Length: 238
Ligand code: SAM
Image 1 (cartoon, rainbow, N blue to C red):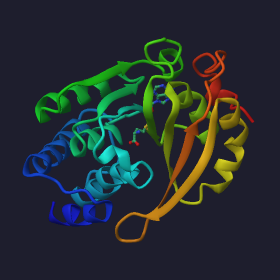
Image 2 (image 1 turned 90 degrees about the horizontal axis):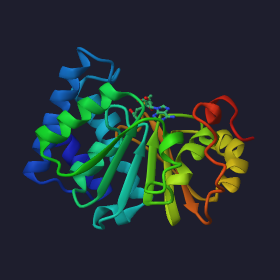
Image 3 (image 1 turned 180 degrees about the vertical axis):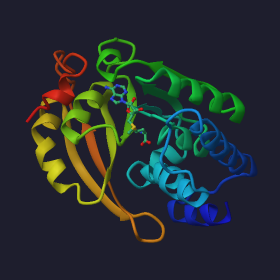
Image 4 (image 1 turned 30 degrees about the horizontal axis):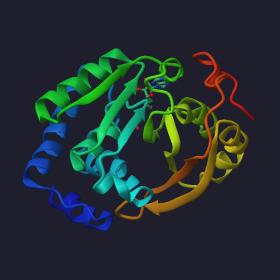
């Protein structure tokens, strides 16, 4: 925990004792539940702190408002809660929605939320393509984040419909995302987005590169998107 806490200084994040306990408890639950369901391949304490917890929090580099403002955030394909849960622990004032198509992962996340007493978190079970058609979710969020769910073209179709005009979609990508960004350019334009920045950095230790792509929502997403569930992955916009 000391190392994690120390490394967070780089992101200007200072944790209270309660928040440190919440991260510890989250780690414990993750490893416990991972014995009976497939949540993560990473289970070593230091690795989880860095590759899941720290990595999730790096979005402050692209979206510093999240440090203090009560923004609405949706995490598409959250899985075991990344990046959404670390964001809620570190920035409890955000209004968080977690979406995943796997019910058992949401059951785990409900347990995490209850045990850590994280307050209200909206949990949506289903496909991103389906919820995006519902008026209460469409063009509704200040920020949409997503990590390790799909290539950027497909992901833009899943995520941009949720973002309100002037909001942002920030996918977490590995290093050297240039070709993927290039291939997604048409989809981003078509869906009402504009790539405004690409922030590249290394995780602590310098052995793992990351790219945050910053996509501004500059106009509404045309009604026909997203296409029906499965199509964005099968036939990405090119
Ligand atoms: N974001 C987490 C992370 O970085 O560890 C989980 C990544 S996991 C590889 C991908 C997750 O996305 C899975 O939990 C899967 O159920 C979910 N997913 C994939 N496509 C989806 C869709 N169209 N709608 C909702 N969830 C989806």
